Length: 171
Image (cartoon, rainbow, N blue to C red; front, side, top):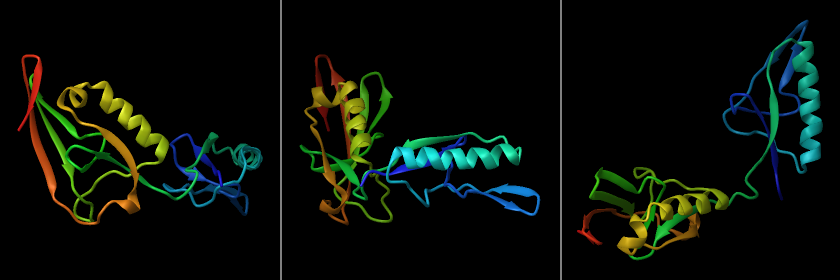
């Protein structure tokens, strides 16, 4: 089910009853992670109206917006097929004009942080990586897979990529 969330001006999350009146004073307590979502955008907009009413009466000065949440709880990872490694948006590190490093991992665990994404964000990351043209010239091919399909433990893969004229050499 699609989920709509409410964020404030600082990209913190709240919900319809996020502003409470205690006595004559209004209190607002946002969270970093969403606690509640709404099934439709219209329901979320109605919740924002209630928040704005309390916000204005309490003279709190916040602003709120409805944002689209993750459609499901599935997380995705980006894989590179020629090295069979998990990568993220920071997999290419530029050392100089002619030398980069490629970093990936053959698995994930609590000691080896690797980004997982929503499907939409993973697609955006792949487009960004492909725009670098390093990957295309070096023969890297990226694809998206579900987090649960990636093995739990693995090793770090670290490769140097050097621009030698019209070719990229991978060490």
